[in-house]
Structure formats: structure tokens, C-alpha cells
Length: 174
Image (cartoon, rainbow, N blue to C red; front, side, top):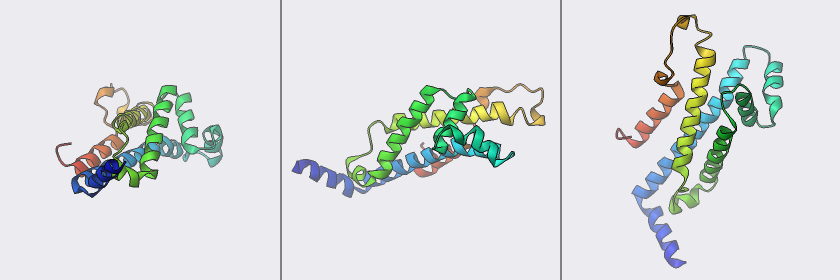
């Protein structure tokens, strides 16, 4: 037991390890918040063109949580599926563990599965944003009328923002 405590203190007091854990935790939490804004904010903004009552009836009535109500709405629109909601839940659980147990994780390290959840979050963010672009933004913009859009060439703004965050936080080698 004493050896584990000593090792935890060594990790905590090592500036390289501490800095890496802090930056990694911060990036994970920031990415999760970007994903949440994409899930809730896009729908809220879309419905802001109509009445608050419509948003309440069509989205918020689906669940007490605006995030899960929005996920349900996206599922009903065929933007995501049940497996995406499960991936979101796993990413959220990892985010909660990092945010609420950060002090312990700074010495013990982040959950070993955080990279998988981070990748899942980025994939889900990309999927949701591309759905909005292909199903709402492009069809309602006359500049794209009659044009063929290659989905593989679409890079949503939040994905670009996340890349810039990673490049800035981790340096140019990211």
C-alpha cells in the first residue's frame, strides 16, 4: 500500500505527468461540452425560428434532460441511432469521472479507456454536424441549389474548432 501511495505522489509531483494529465482532462471535458452544444444548441437554435412552445412540444417533452430529449429528437430524425446514444452515455460517464475525481486522477492517471471515448465523441460530433449540414443547412441555402455535395469533403466547424484546440494545447505535432 505504501508503495502505491509513494508512486501516486511521484506522479503528482512530476511536472510533465501532472501537466499531461491536466491538459488531457481539460481537452476531454472541452470536447464533451462541444458535443453537448452540438446536440442541444443546434436543435434549440433551429426551433428558435418558431415559438418556444414548439420547441417544448417537439423536443423538450421527450425527456426531462434537454440533452437526452435532443438525442431522442435526433434519433427520430434518423440522424443517430441507439448505439450512438450508448456511446454518448459512455463518454458522459468518463467525463463525469474525470471532472468529479480530477484530484485523484492527477496522481493515479486518467481512465484507461478515455481515448476510446474521446474518439467516439469526435465521431458522434462529426456525424451530428454533418447531418445538420446535409439535411438543414445545404437544402435551405439557395447557393447550393443543384450542386452535388461530396459528404466526405465536409468538415464541420466544431470539428475544425476541436482540431485547433488540440493543436494549440498539444503543439503542432498533434
